[in-house]
Structure formats: C-alpha cells, structure tokens
Length: 180
Image 1 (cartoon, rainbow, N blue to C red):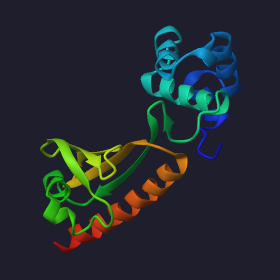
Image 2: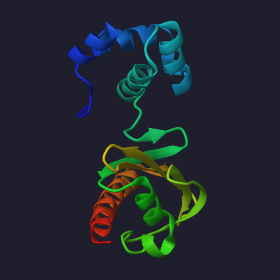
Image 3: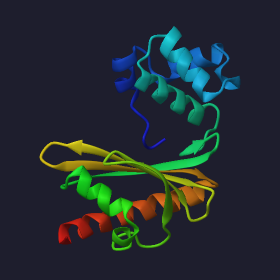
Image 4: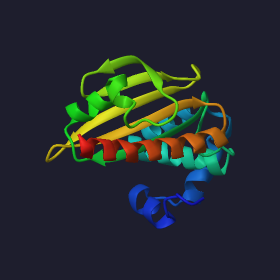
C-alpha cells in the first residue's frame, strides 16, 4: 500500500507494528465489526488517540477486510486541499457566488444546500446523488486552507476522476484569485 505509515512510525506512536495491531483486532472479532465500532474499541479500550484509532482502523479495513481506497459505507469519498494566499472571506465569496464560481470552476457545478459564512459550504453535485463540501480554515498572514470533500460517489473510478477534477479546479481557483 503506497500511503501506508511505516511500521517504525506506527510502533513509535502506538507501541505496536501493523501486524500486531491486525492480530489484536482479528482476535477481538473486528472482521465482523463496522468501522465506527473498531475505532471506538481502539480508542476507548486500547487507549489510542482518536487520530491513531482512525488510522489503524482504516489500515486494518484496507489490508484485512479488503476495503478499497476512498471507500465508505455510503460510497466513495475523496478530498483535496489547497492553502491559498487570500483571506477566508475572499475565498468563501468566490466559492459561494455562482457568477464568481463560473470564472474558475470548469465543468459541472453544484447547488448550495447550506453555508456558514467564511467557514463552510455544502451542496449537491449536478448528478443530485453526490455531495460536495468546502471547509475554509484561516491561517496566518491572510492565508486560507480550503478543503473540498466530495462524497457518496458510486465507484472507485469515478472517485479518482473527481479527485483530478478538484485538483485542476483548485489550481484554477488560485489563478483566478491572483487576477482579481
């Protein structure tokens, strides 16, 4: 697995290597458990932090249970993020308003279902089946980290396609913001 955290790193942070975690989870019956139950067991009963509970659970599901990359029970989910040299309010505006969005978002669009000023925008994708969410995280020196998450995607192939789509469009967003 290409993005797998090394055995050395996982042992340093958790006290066990991957094979030890997998053996422990197998013994606890995790093959028949849902994601949430595995993560809660790792956190509450075995003392892992919330982050490490998720990492160990996802790695276990991918290697032992055959979970595919980006998959979730409700479909596939991808995310892309980019740190932009602009304030959260400026970035939020060019994502929120359709007239401004047309200037950088090339291809399908979405309809907003909920927004919290300078914090988040949620919407329905043009297929009316998948969801898009934008999270805006202000950083130092008027920078903003923008995270786009696209969920309920029907296939791994479509997930990979949308990951590339959002990467291209976040680059176009950067160029657009530099011009205005």
